[in-house]
Image 1 (spheres, one colour):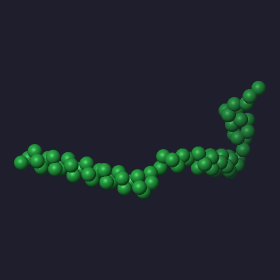
Image 2 (cartoon, one colour; image 1 turned 30 degrees about the vertical axis):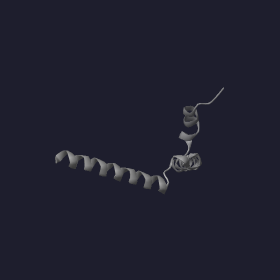
Image 3 (cartoon, one colour; image 1 turned 90 degrees about the vertical axis):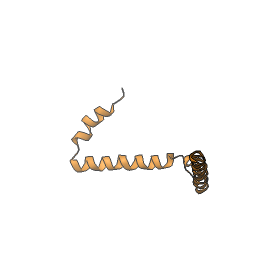
Image 4 (cartoon, helix red, strand yellow; image 1 turned 180 degrees about the vertical axis):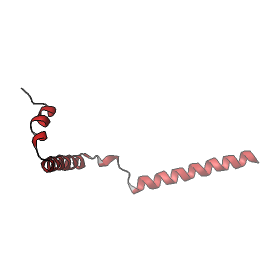
Length: 74
């Protein structure tokens, strides 16, 4: 028979002192942070080259759009 999280909380955690509950919460959260930091997929992060390419494209696009506006106004 499997014990549910709710049952563990009622039977164990609720009986701990406030200080022990906080210590348990800290242990759980610290463990989650450790697991999360190893699970980050760095391949989705932008390199400086990616950022430069984006800025370059944005500037070229803006310059093109502004020159089309100027031509339309003349």
